[in-house]
Amino acid sequence: MLKRCEQCGIEFKTKHYHGGQRFCSNRCSGLWTAKERGQSGTVRQQCPTCGREFSAFAGDKRKHCSAECYHVAKRTDRPKCEVCGKPVRLMRNRYCSKHCSVAARPRPGTGSWMGFYQRAWKANPDTMPCVLCSEPGKHRHHPDYGKPEFVLWLCTGCHRKLHADQRRKTGRNAMPTEAPICE
Image (cartoon, rainbow, N blue to C red):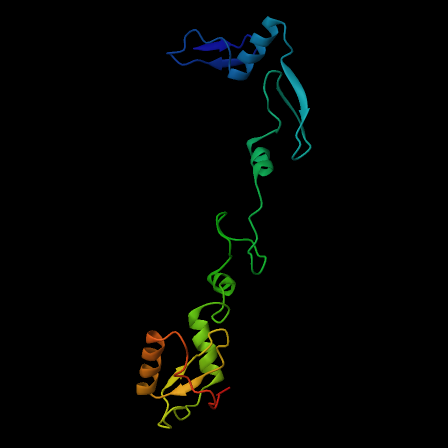
């Protein structure tokens, strides 16, 4: 069934279940209702994203001319990688890649026990004789953990005796006063 729109005058075809349809679109219906109430139908506005002028209903709170401009204005930049400064893949990430994630981790030797032993190993790569009995030294003993490079070489038996004596006594009388120090 063909009808004529009461707002714009265009002929349109109605569906059989919309027999009482008076307007060709919701826009025409809104304009006719606004005119009947004494309101201005549409207002001309300027889109803040693209600068194009568009018309919107007076009561609308639209600021953008299209959904595309709205999404462009809403879009935020991705965070930057904390290591290299490239944009990250997901918004929740701190690093752009596994390489940057590994690069940001603390290095062994800056405060971990593993770093402590690695520094001592690098400082004393070659074995020396035991400072107590002169047998081949297999253990590195650290009398002061604040100085990881300061190492006394001990054989297995002397190292066990030294730590057993230190557990029993509070003093360090089992330590030699004059010992060759490996640095």
